[in-house]
Picture 1 (cartoon, helix red, strand yellow):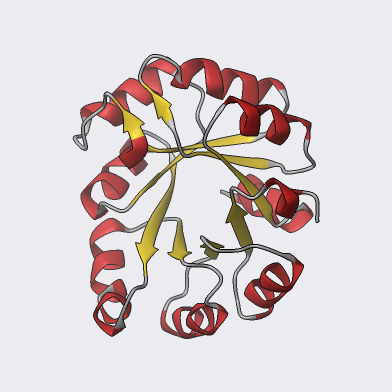
Picture 2 (cartoon, helix red, strand yellow):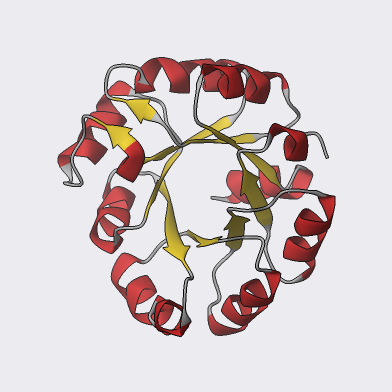
Length: 187
């Protein structure tokens, strides 16, 4: 976990990849961490291998891993077949189980209303993640609210479109931002 935090301090922008072109761009970028947001059970090992060859950390969004279920077996599959550093999921039980497989865990939250905001404490107590990710990250005011509510590192993602969004997210308590916008990766 210390290594991840160190990488985020060096470069707080995380590349979120969703296709081959964005993977190639991420590999050539200064981003030290890559979130794999679109993969299949057939190509995930290859994607992670390419990321690791570029000395970057790889996190798999298991909810978006095509051909896999949201059951614990996906974690066993990833541990045996990839060198992924961590997983991302919106599902508390999956996040909690991933720790047993040695993954760094990121629990992703979609903050769409006050009910989703007020349920964060309960979900975190169920998932026990290393890091939380709040979406949309462009709503920087909510990052501050979450920062005051929890003692975990926060990654802001979703609708982080420009330098102003990045600066405001970091200023309001995020330790890093994740974006699929390749222009943001170059900031």
